[in-house]
Length: 189
Image (cartoon, rainbow, N blue to C red; front, side, top):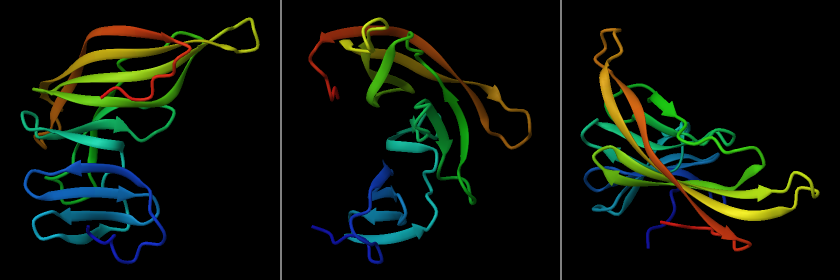
């Protein structure tokens, strides 16, 4: 087992990570910077004190057709599907876009972080976990629901500022609900 990166204090919380083509894995931590793990050489390299994956929380997925990274945004109140170019930029990565695929009805409260699955060819399935609360009876939980939404991200041209960056749009395909009653579903994929 590899030792943790030197210079870290305690056990840093990993906030986002990405497997890069080849042997590298990028890891961002809260408060201890970001690192690259070279799995062939079994070595850690500290990349920056600032997080290079600032827009994301959890696992990132690379879509080679678009040459972009996709993941769920780090902002807790808006866990949206987001895209960024993490490799080609010499400076801090820039967010390319973010999209809201599902807006829950009133009384639905998310009880767990959403999960993202890359289905290939810029298609994703996003699962969201909700408790449905009674509006009449002291906000009692009356049901648990998981919503699965299929989305596809497509290029729609360039942004017109001459830098060659592509504009994207998200197309929502379908949403399906799985009602679990009083059983709380914690993980899908």
